[in-house]
Every structure is written in C-alpha cells, then in structure tokens.
Length: 175
Length: 104
Image 1 (spheres, chains in turn blue, orange):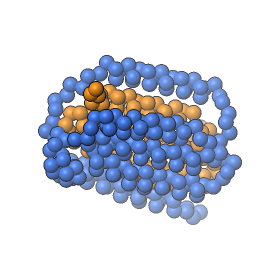
Image 2 (cartoon, one colour):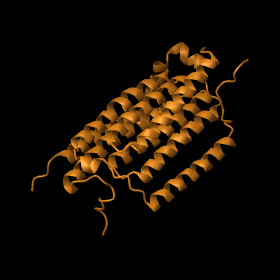
Image 3 (cartoon, one colour):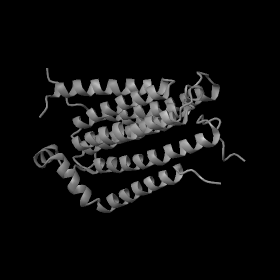
Image 4 (cartoon, each protein chain N blue to C red):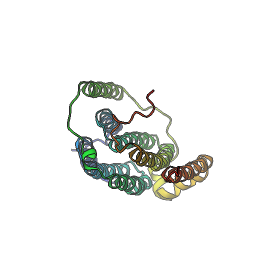
C-alpha cells in the first residue's frame, strides 16, 4: 500500500498540472502550443489513473490519447499550414463572454451537486487486493473478452469504419 | 498526524473543473482544431469521473466504459480531422465562423 501522504502529494501535483495545462491549452493562440499543453494535461491525468488503481488505463491514456490522437492532431495542424488563419485574432465579443459565463454557472451547479453527493452504490467484488493479486491488465483483459466481448467486437468494427471513412474522405475527388 | 484518504468527491470536482475548462474553450475558441481538442479534454474529464467512481465501488465497469470511450475518441479523431482537411481544401479556412456550409 502506498502511504496516504504520498498519495495526497501525487494527487495535488497532478491535479494542479492538469488544471493549469488545460487552462494554457484553452488560452494559447497558436494551435501547436495548445496541442502540446493538452499532451501535458493527458499525461498528468494518467498519473491520477494510477492513483485510482487503473494502471492499464493509465498506460492506454498515454499511448492512445497523448500518443496516437495528439500525434494525429499535430500532424493535421502542420498539414493545414496557414499562419494568418491558424493564429486567431484576440477579439472579444459579447456573445462569447455570455456563453463562457453560462458555462461557469453550469460548473457551479455541478459542484453543488457533487458537494451533496454520497456514492452509496453496492460495492463490487474487484477490490484493489484482488487486482494486485491477479495483475491489472489480466483482470481488465478477462473482463473485456468475457462480459464485454460483444461491445469489444463492435468497437473494433467502429475503428475499422473510422479508418475506411478517413481514407474515403481524404481521397481526392476527380471531376 | 494522520491524513485521511483522498475523498472521492475531490476527484469528481477535478473532473468537473476540467469539463468546464473544455466547455468554455468550445464556446470561446474559433479554430476548429482547438475546438476539437477541447472536446477531447471534456471526454477526459468524464473518463476521470468514470474511473474514480469505478474504483470507489470496487468495480471494473468504469474502466470498461473508459476503454470504449477511448475507442470512440480514436475513431472520431480520424474521421473528424479528415473532415477538417476537406473543409480546408474546400474553403481555405478552418475558422468555424466562416464555415456555414449547411446554412440555407
């Protein structure tokens, strides 16, 4: 078991990094800077997943999100190279400010809900001890190929459709 | 002095903060790729909530949901970015204020 104080330290460090880097992501004008800050946010979220006994998901987060998806985004940003268009003008507009304020009000609502929330669901059988005994990847894998086998197959078909769709869209149309 | 274990609501608050930052970005930014990245951040905030509540209920179902959300996000990234490249080829811009192809 990890010491509780160490857990607090990791949690607060990762939470501060995640919030700070996602704020930087939203405010940077250059999309490449935004993408790099988002990668930092994803990696710190992976650290929080490790605290939550989801080691496999932390690895998948780094590989799939910070690796594959953000690589694709950076690739497209560099492909669409048009400086004047990509670097936005910092123009403030009234509707945008109203929208942002309404979204922050939404956050206040959600936070009030969380403050009053007690998680009283029935506890399952997979305690951290069971997971540590069998290995996180093994527990996740047996569940993925057991209870969720059908959904897993559907996800594979979805990814195949995504690949084919991207190829079809990117193909130059002759006319 | 003994610290108490991290309360689960702290994880939910962190998820809500990240979700709000992403939503404000979707509303205020005008570059389609940055809007897309903000949507990814919102998905991640939801993932964090799923994993946190799954962990506190000693269940793996939250992790399974996150797995499928990741699969959907990967497919969405492939198709969405291909659409951005197409729109850029067609209109010469990816500023979402200038893209109103469906407007009558």
